[in-house]
Length: 319
Image (tube, rainbow, N blue to C red; front, side, top):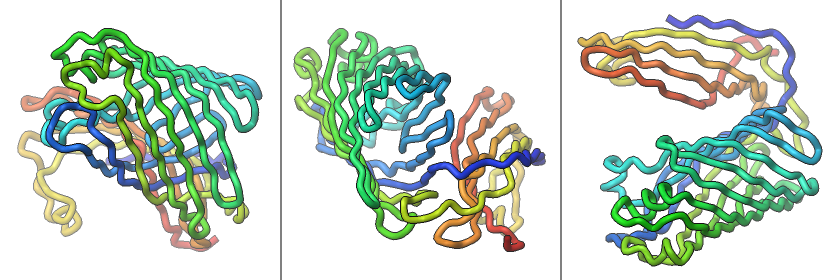
């Protein structure tokens, strides 16, 4: 049973984008096969305090022309053979804090302290230089990553060898170029150069790991277009329901089969308006992050899930 509350305050259009990319990375471990591939959803958003940058994002608690401080989170990939990914579950969202020195409009220096779900700590010192032109922009970056012993032993020693703490180097380029109106090609190419102790591990086979993605994204604003009218405002949606054994096709055909264990979930989502027009069509786009709570039962323990999707709404009445 969903319940929604609408906020009517006006909101200005902000930069946003949604896309998908094919990511490929070399595997530095001694194993059969050289690369692993993934399909990666990409979300971009630049608001007053909240931002999304592909597979990472954060919240600014303090901002000025010179400094910014806030919370950050990002998807960190653990590139191992596909047959072992479901067992090891190494790819996850890491969280932490970040402070950034805005040296100039094009050059930033940032320091962040990150942790995985089990408190394995690492830190990144990054310099980022941006270049832009008509219909394109590029970011060049270089990072020193300091890894705690627990982090390094787990993800590069595979808990079979004690490597200890270490510092490695990362560098790369990422950017986008306009194809047609709001449609862009987006990409990233980067490399990690391991330190001597990590490279000397009995499970590591390469001194350097390469990664990159190439995809397409639709952005809500571009230099050549004026800002369209936004939807009315933001909203909160609260819902509760009972699980089903039916698939999407069966549900659409109204052939719903209720879960015999009657597992329940409750969710709350926030809808933030991003755009009221795409390619000149009256399509409302909302960023809708939310939490879903799965209630405990005889067959499952309670757990919390987080989502950050986008919602597309077609108005029935033209503006």
